[in-house]
Image (cartoon, rainbow, N blue to C red; front, top):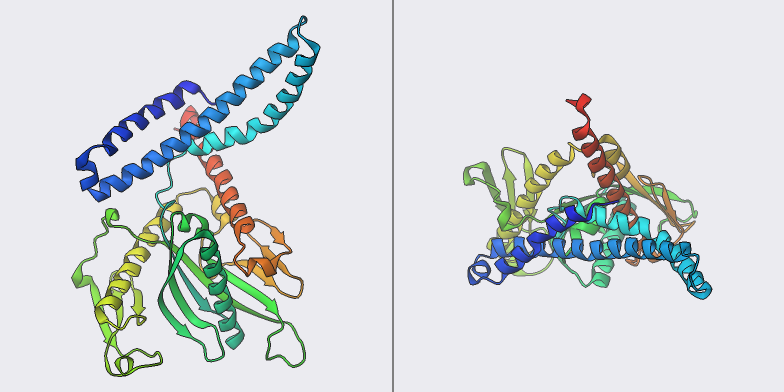
Amino acid sequence: MIAKENVEKILLRLREVEHLLALPETSADQGTYRKLVREHANLRKLEERAAIYYRTLDTIENDRQMIADPNGDPELVELAQLELAESEAALPNAEKALSLALLPPDPDEHRNAMLEIRAGTGGDEAAIFAGDLFRMYSRYAEIKGWKIQILSSAPSELGGYKEISFLVQGDGAFYHLRYEGGGHRVQRVPETEAQGRIHTSAATVAAFPEAEPEDELVIRPEDLRIDTYRSGGAGGQHVNKTDSAVRITHLPTGVVVQSEEERSQHQNKEKCMSVLRSKILAAQRASEEAKLGAERKDMIGSGDRSERIRTYNFPQNRLTDHRINLTLYSLDRIMEGLLDELLDALVSRNEDLRLQTQLSKIAGDSDPSAE
């Protein structure tokens, strides 16, 4: 059982945050304001889940007393038995939901997501598959009401992309898409295959959170090498005659970003800096994630491009996520952007592992022999 007094102590902060949000000086400082808005949302979620959990406990206690009363009305006792069964069945989920709300908030939960897709082994078919993945994520974003902004792309001659990077703008985009990083393998008959043979090809995906101003990342101008070049894209005198494309190399880390989607060199540079900041933030997050238990990293994956995470088998209409041993026979719907069942399963597994990690930490802190 989760101690009610401990939850109430945490919720004292909710009224304090509401007071701070009402102050004019808070709204004048956008960084502070955004932090407080997110803290308020987390506390409100905690308050709502606590109310459900303790209401369920009270219902169970009252029903048990009514059932145990030898002078109770038989009809009321029967109703109490039905209600008790429902409440006892609901209690584990209510307790888990409250436990998750008590965990330290995920700093990236509300951020936009940046995704990069690259064609892997398989030649033209791999590039076509990379394009299919981009369309899948675009359709998913459309269903969610999010926006897609292409940052850079290298189209393939036969369709699809050799490489494409894009920003998914929407509250919680990274929260849902963070586990897409890794190798995606496809098994299907290419349109160019005359014999009807199934080919296997692959694409890789990288996913990282968009950096925000309050992250206070320090990127020194002297650590950057900025190159400009002519866009390789099709169309227009401007593209052919102006060095509008930009490539930026962060010398300390070796991270390279480039953009040629915009006609203005200034706009391309802004895009590059946004991606660079996000990649540096992602490297910091990866370092923090390395402190997690091995089980959680093994189950959810590292997000490394070389790690095969998923297989798309078109002849059998089957998708398999190898990290959580999930197989779905609805690949046609998934490719149309209906990703909720898949992504929710990954989020749920991560939540379970976060709870396990937290409980292990608490157990270790309370074990005198661990010191």
